[in-house]
Image 1 (cartoon, rainbow, N blue to C red):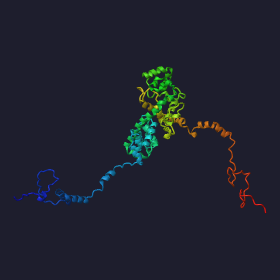
Image 2: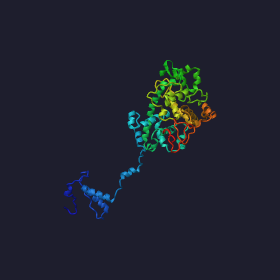
Image 3: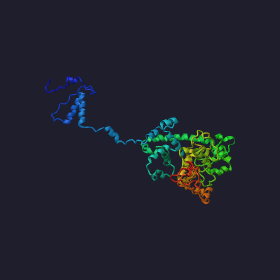
Image 4: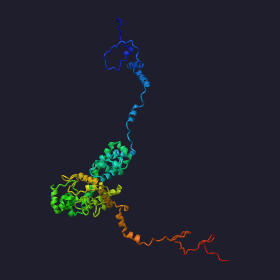
Length: 481
């Protein structure tokens, strides 16, 4: 071997253990000749030796890793710290409510709802959808209501809206969920942290509202002619295609209030033109069925609006009782279910429930309920016009609800001066306040002894016995000696 050359080789022992970490099978390249420099720092030499040991034998590598870990300790449980750095999920205050909300399924039957424990929520939502308009966006109501829950009432964005927008709809309908849905307000924070649950609940409400509409139509259809006091000769109006513009009596309720004079001049001609589409009836053409014609004044559109007797009768039928509809003999109650007002504790009328009844109250000739009737009239747009009007006429709505509450549920005496005056004018009040001579006085009862009904009166009673006297009935007194 020439002088100055260096041969690199591996010992036989190490050659028998090939390096498993090398992926290439190229022959080893000769390392450069080390320079006569000072040795590298201790850490680098150790790390390089550790790498060689790892390549040569895996067992020392574990100890090397342990030594390296012991010299530079890592932070404790880094994975948990990473999770804790993100916001924690809000836990529901009522786990039963959270479980029921996640289980909401509009296709479930009664047995499934009871088994999944959301039957109470289903019944509450069944009532809530009757208090709003037909096309309510319940997902928007829940999401917007939860987002604005902590905002004071005077700072709510709905006050800045001139029209009945989705913001106003959410502001009006969200309190219904707080009042009637058990556990809803308690877990507002949990709902805000789970938008998927809110979307699921909104979709559930919208699909339940379809079932509610079908149920209420089934109650109104057989009785609507009786409620309107329309003569039904030979029961021809029981066949719905004979109603609407096909019958002058039913057509009168569908005529727009502004077309009433035109209709009364020639009812048959008006009906013919309405059927053929020559007269366009739009969603904003409020029909006569909404008006109390005794209170309506021509030219003043608001007068008598939403106060018709037929609308009141339909409301009683839907919410109070089938036997409470004035002047109409209703059918049997079927399964004997309690009235909605009694079942859900309804004690006052809402503007939404009035509009709900007006939307359902359909005297058209359509054999099945449809959202559109003709080219220009839509049930959803019709309800929207009423809500727009109510939003812009708060004083009118307040007076309207006071009237309806007196008609449906009575009025509080202390809040109604006219009612108090009527009560003071009754025969009972007059005789009690002006012609009463006084109440009968309580008889005097002796304080010394108590008497039963069979005991003698005070005049006939014997004098009280002194101590040592023989009680009455003990026997005859002894003769004098």
